[in-house]
Amino acid sequence: MSKKIFIKTFGCQMNEYDSNRIIDLVKLIGYEKTNNQIDADCCILNTCHIRSKATEKVYSEIGRIKKNFKNAKKPLVIVAGCVAQAESEEMLERDPYIDMIIGPQSYHEINDKILNYFRENKKINLTEFNVTKKFDKLEKIKNNNSKISNFLTIQEGCDKFCNFCVVPYTRGPEYSRPFEQIINEAKNLVENGSKEIILLGQNVNAYHFISDGKEYKLSNLLLELEKIKDLVRVRFTTSHPKDMTKDLIDCFNNCSKLMPFLHLPVQSGSDKILKLMNRKHDIRFYYSIIEKLKKINSNIDFSSDFIIGYSEEDEGDFEKTMNLVKKIEFTNSYSFIFSARPGTPAAKLQKINNDVTKNRLKIIQNQLFNLQLNKNKELEEKKIEILVENKLKSQNSFFGRTRKMTPVIFESTSCNPGDLIQVEIISSNQNNLFGKHIENKFKAA
Ligand code: SAM
Ligand code: SF4
Ligand code: F3S
Image (cartoon, rainbow, N blue to C red; front, side):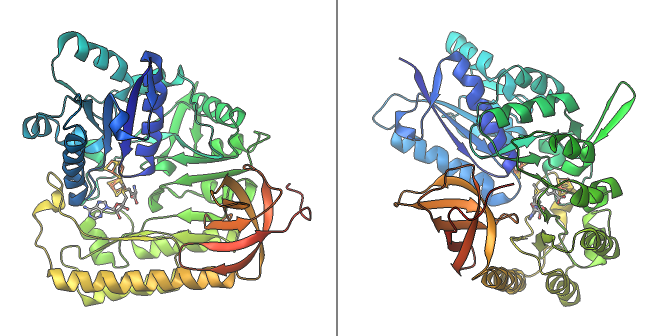
């Protein structure tokens, strides 16, 4: 009988990709995925270290496992991901229920380590940065994901060192996977049924690979993906403004499969704050990127990330952020209160008043909420192209996304996951569009 493994994923899409690859790996030593924690012989928490609450979530999740297994045999408990990388020793000491720590650049060794653990019954702490070896190993193991939309990590780590951010410490320096390796994995996913690929990297647009004296950038990857016949949509995330080079901007014109939507985190609308954050770009530069993209394709929409209440942010700085939000009309954006992370240069900065920060967060979130609501409202009574992702539980109900990523729930009697169809939007709220399939009237390109 096969053993069961339960994996819970926190944090970004790169962690989601990693969790799927961990499942591909452990299958080779007889584990099968379960969505029911209580059935598991092994529980993995794939963790995120980006804000302080994320770490506490891990400990409360371990508490939940303990409770669930109070009257059952203890499962093997593995903490993986960015908290594991940052707090390995501390975690093993703080909670003896944890059996193994595996950092995000070491999980390719998980099978050997699990087998070792059962042979020697000794706690394992694996946090080396072995990213080349990781992808060399993963290349040999088929990516078994067979969803309609799949993530594909092309780049890892970060050399930008924004003063507030843990990523350069938890994921290590920038590394780009070999070009051919990525294209092969993409073809593989498409053979499995994938219609959309979302290229991932902590700084995806810093992708840079040299082979036989030839340089490959993200734009080369996008042009190559264009050639995969059954692939219909391509996206990439997360980009840094500084790496939005002309060749990449041109792809929004030259690549028919690249969707007209870009997540381009700005963090703040104030040059003073951007400088204090060590963001390496100012607002003029950010606007210039948006303008170039709009010029090439006036239909592109943008989303962003904002950090509110960074040290020394005054009313004027916040107003500049709000002006930027209104001017660019961001959709699908994220805003976070600054969280001082241990080990980063911003950790010791003077904090601004908590109530002031909370109030600013409320203001920006209201604005972003209204922008999203209005954008969605504008689509009511319109017919738009949807990629069908899956069937929902209720009869004739399906889920898909627009070209700009907005989720759509719609009725259809004839569509299948993977179809590119037209849907008439009937109603909307902040998060979703609702509509009905215009059946048999539109043939996907
Ligand atoms: N590499 C991307 C970039 O430069 O824009 C972002 C990657 S980071 C994983 C995702 C987001 O988390 C950031 O854009 C930032 O808004 C937020 N973030 C990172 N560190 C933070 C901190 N210490 N406090 C609050 N938010 C933070
Ligand atoms: Fe973090 Fe900055 Fe790197 Fe993004 S660019 S991952 S925010 S250090
Ligand atoms: Fe979190 Fe690590 Fe991603 S810190 S956001 S899981 S890179």
